[in-house]
Length: 89
Image 1 (cartoon, one colour):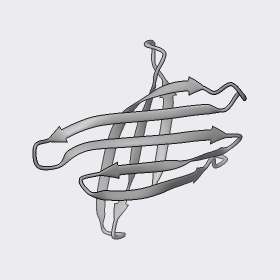
Image 2 (cartoon, rainbow, N blue to C red):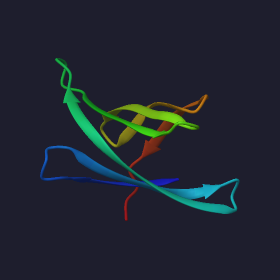
Image 3 (cartoon, rainbow, N blue to C red):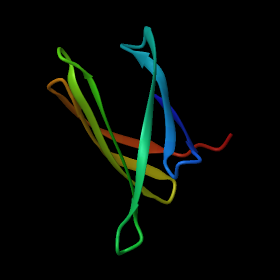
Image 4 (spheres, helix red, strand yellow):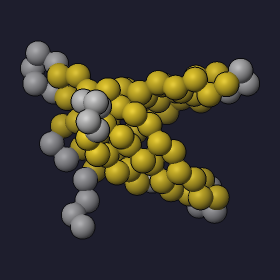
């Protein structure tokens, strides 16, 4: 999975996640991320979105530390962790 994160004019960030599910089915998902700074200077990015009556809602909370984005997500009974590292282009 890859993510491109860009700042918006509203003081948030736009994230575009892309990848392949089960190495076959391509997907792309956009999320608006709200940024918060903790007292110790860490940057937290969070997102939530209602996905409809069947799928419920999606929530993601991550922390940026240097070149690493890590955190957790949950949606429709699924839970998981996110661990991504910035790659040189």
